[in-house]
Length: 178
Image (spheres, rainbow, N blue to C red):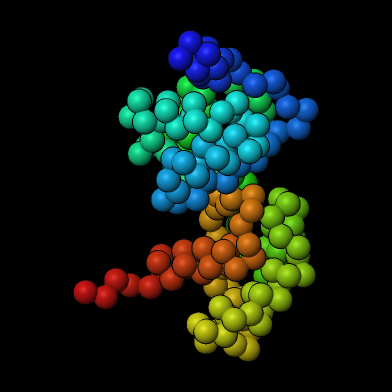
């Protein structure tokens, strides 16, 4: 019992070493604490999956964890790691799309931000399944990508980005039907 208590104290209160490169951990929406703790332990962010589970349950914070992509630099104890998860300190890439840009210019900005390959975005915006499903042919999404500042996960797919921009267009410019 004493050995267990000593190990738990070490795992709970001693921070793992600082990483030479930050480590990305993705928390899926609705993920149980056990899956979150497993991912954090696998990435070396916490010393022990069990200690993270116990802290999450005993602190009552397990149900307050926000989904998203988190970047950890190491050197943080479990309470500090949990604070990031509860605060939703997720990594986002912010891209501003001003009014009047073409699909090509938007694709250039998204590529410069490190989100997508320019050609893949242009292809999806001009001929992709989402554009076809919305009946936006033959010009594709040209003129339908709403100018705004967007915050995307660094792991967002071309279709997620395109869908977000089209959804914003339709939400803002389509009158509410009651």
